Each structure stands twice: as C-alpha cells, then as structure tokens.
Length: 209
Ligand code: AMP
Image (spheres, protein in one colour):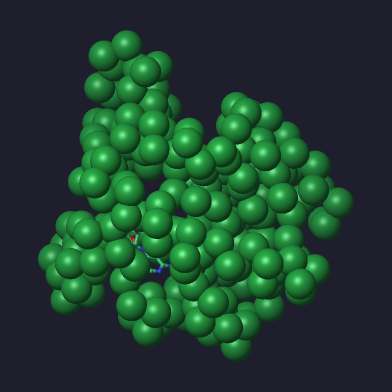
C-alpha cells in the first residue's frame, strides 16, 4: 500500500505517520526529517534546504523529488510506503505519478486557528520524533516514549509558522482537489485526539488490506 499523508503543518501528519508505520509495517518517509538529517550533517543538500526551511519556504521541487525518488525505490518500500509531507505542490504530485502508483491520500483537516497554537507550542523528541505540546508537558524535558531529549524545531516560531501556513494555502491545499478528482482522497477530522484520528484512519486502511 502506497499512502500519502496530506494536511497543513501542525495537522498531526507526523503523529499519525508514526502510528500507521507501526500498525501496518510501512516505512515512514518524511521529507522534513530527511532535510533535517541533511542539515544536521551539513551536506550540500542540507545547506541548501536550510536556506528555505528557516524562512518557512518550500525546498525546490527538483531537489525534493530526487530525494523521494531515490528513497521510495529502496528495498524496504517494495511492499509499500507512507509519505509524510510529500507531495506539497502539484508539480511534486505529477512527478510522483511518474515514479509510483498511489493507493490512498489521507487528508487530515484541522481548524486553521488551532494550527498556530499547536506548532508554536510543539516539542519534538530528537530520537524517535514523537511530538508533544508544551501545555501538557508539565515541565518534562524527556520523551515519555523513549527517554530522548525534547526540543523545539527552529521553524516552529510564530514568524516562520505564519509563512509556512501561507505557503500551505497557496502551494499544498490545491492537492486536496487534485487527489479528490482522482478518487484517492480520504478526509479525516484532525481536531480531536491522535487516538481518535488513528481509529478513523485504521478503519479505512483495514478495508484496503
Ligand atoms: P515538515 O517537517 O514536514 O514540517 O517540513 C519542514 C520543512 O521542510 C518545510 O517547511 C519545507 O521547508 C521543507 N519540506 C519538507 N517537505 C517538503 C516538500 N515536499 N517540498 C518542499 N519542501 C519541503
């Protein structure tokens, strides 16, 4: 099963992707995580990506598509994959069509005014990528899942979040209609808890097995 997770920044794609990856044994491919790994290692891709990510802009399609094409053709994707944060533009979706078949696009819908609060208060585990909200951490600085250190992503600040959300509206939201027209879209309300969202998603995935 080849799955795409669609949704605005802060909609909960990463959280659902972790759950789906565990529940359905699919590799979780997050282009954001791939870029952050390159940035940490200061590779040429990392240096390039940083100049866009720090401003809340998208990394150019050509670079992003190349990374995804190489990744989804690895051995661990032969029975399927789950893409988190790709495609984010129509040209990326067109490029993906040429690389691979898509079985389902899960679109997580969250009220726009919730996203800013979610993102600016987000803390992420540097080891397992689990995310938390500061309002529920009670000062805890370690991950409840693996004990890793929690940190705030550099692009989770109000200024950068504003531009990420604006970019989402212009560049990424049109993908909803794009995939709806192709009969691949599954909408799920993301304002509820991660467990409720996952219950809806897994009901759908179970019908596709
Ligand atoms: P994410 O972790 O998905 O929120 O991604 C963090 C940042 O990485 C985004 O704000 C973009 O700058 C960049 N990025 C991730 N995925 C893509 C993509 N598919 N196309 C372009 N840029 C991306």
